[in-house]
Amino acid sequence: MIVPWAAGGGTDATGRIIAKMMQDEFKQPFNVVNRTGGGGVVGHTAIAQAPADGYTIGVLTIEIGTYKWLGQSKLSGSKDYTPIALYNFDPGAFYVVSDSPFKNAKDLLAALKAKPKDYKLATGSSVGGAWQMAFGQLLLKAGIDPGQFNWITSQGAAPALQELVAGGTDVVPCSLPEAKALLDAHKIRAMAVLSDQRLPAYPDVPTAKEAVGIDVQAGAWRGIAGPKGMPQEATTKLIAAMEKIYKSEEFRSFMTKQGFGLMWRGGPDFGKFMDESEAESGKALKAIGLAKSS
Image (cartoon, rainbow, N blue to C red):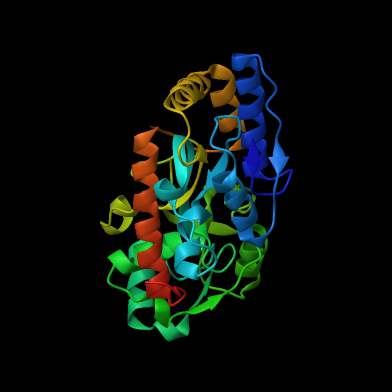
């Protein structure tokens, strides 16, 4: 089980519990190998280039849909992988400080549209990362050009939110679990979540459709895949095992306690999801002015 991100992070944590449960299911060892570097390119490449015999799989993340656009790699979702299952989706949300003059998302977007040069937007993660793309998609659908803003690069959600509280930026996009501590301390306010429904753990945060009348589902995701051309028998068994794991109380309890959102797309449906995600990422990255490829 190849994980393209460092040990101790969210992708590693979810990959390890899946490997443990796969081991229990198949009565065979599933070894987790962290192949980090290049913003995930190293690990995603290792999964794509592994022998397609069904004995090497890995965790794919939303970044696989950005490499082509950013000129970092030619890797692409269903073209280079055998999709097994999407198991996680964490929608983005966006925040202002508690004493911000913007009382709701509608007021905020109106101000951003009227005077884009007056406001600083945080990327919320790396440049071209999940949260910048998610907020970029909302701006696009609101008829606002994301490329005209002064984007402040973040080294992650935590420092981005601290910068917001300190007054260095006006808006920060990231997931709701990442912002929980500052929300609970009433130092920031969540304007809306980019999901088709409110999150059970955050019932007071409206969806973008409720807040501004725009239907946007955007954020970060994780899924299991193998290299292209795996035997159908192995693929079928792995999809069935993943579905059993996904529906288990052990896995669902782990994901909920850790604040990870649950979403299921099996086999070809996951492939279609990846391709759609890549297309949306391309639109957002082009609009922000980061895309090097067409």
